[in-house]
Each structure stands twice: as C-alpha cells, then as structure tokens.
Length: 149
Ligand SMILES: Nc1ncnc2c1ncn2[C@@H]1O[C@H](COP(=O)(O)OP(=O)(O)OP(=O)(O)O)[C@@H](O)[C@H]1O
Ligand SMILES: [Mg+2]
Image (cartoon, rainbow, N blue to C red; front, side, top):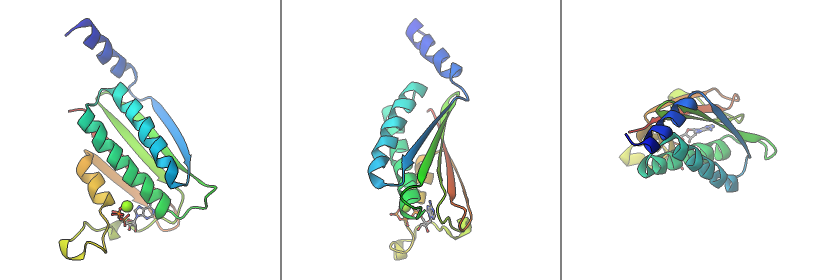
C-alpha cells in the first residue's frame, strides 16, 4: 500500500460514525443540492464512480418521494442525514408528510406498471440495505446503506 493510499484509509476510519445533516426546502429544485452533497461525501468515503452513480439515483428517488408523496407544506423541510461508516455510507431521508402503510408498498408488476411505482424498487436494487419507517400522518423515514465494493 502506498503512503497515499494508507493516508486515505486512515482518513476514512477516522470519520467513522460522523454525521452530516442537510435540510432542504420541500421543493424539487433542491434535490440537485442533495445529489451534489452526496457526491462530495461519497468521494471522501472512497466509493467508486459506479457506486456513487447508484447512490445519486437512490437519494434522488427518496427525496422526490418525500417531496411528492409527503405533501408537506412548502415551508416544511426534508431532512437528509449522512452517517459515515468505516467502509460505507448510511443515508436517511426524513419527511414529516402524510406517510403511508409500509406493508402496502408493493414491488412493481409488469402487468400493472402504472399502479405501483418504481422508486422504492430501484432504491432497493441499488443500495445494500433499505429500511422504511412510516405511518399514516407520521411522515416517512427511509434508511439506506451502501458499502464499498
Ligand atoms: N415519502 C413518502 N411519503 C408517503 N408515501 C410515500 C413516500 N414514499 C413513497 N410513498 C408511497 O409508496 C409508493 C411507492 O413509491 P415509489 O417511489 O416506489 O413509487 P412512486 O413514487 O409512486 O412512482 P415513481 O417513483 O416510479 O415515480 C408511493 O406511491 C407512495 O404511496
Ligand atoms: Mg417515487
């Protein structure tokens, strides 16, 4: 391992457990800010370009859901929490909108593609672990984790 690589690894370990919180207005035009922030953080953790692209798609789907289904008032914010892990990144997207019954979120069916969306299915396929907490009128928190490699 070169000295440079060794330095990068120790930097990653040093940041284990550190948290970056971001709060955006409940508006679609701010999703790009979240994606840019994600890229900066993911680079630091040591993800490759493909992994970063996957996370960009996943975080955009989660934020779009929070904005479109959450039905928060425009003054309310969407909160995004990045937690650095030793070899990965946990991302939480939290809205205080109308929420839903998690059991009712179905995987998409080829015959009825219009009825069941693709967003959560895509998120699950791109991230290593996805946990959704929601109840009607209690908002939604989606916790997604991706590991390096
Ligand atoms: N943040 C949220 N608040 C409330 N309900 C949500 C939220 N995110 C998802 N849902 C519910 O889960 C369903 C599935 O979400 P998903 O992203 O998979 O599909 P979609 O948003 O309907 O369509 P697509 O993402 O393909 O445009 C939504 O239709 C909605 O009922
Ligand atoms: Mg969606």
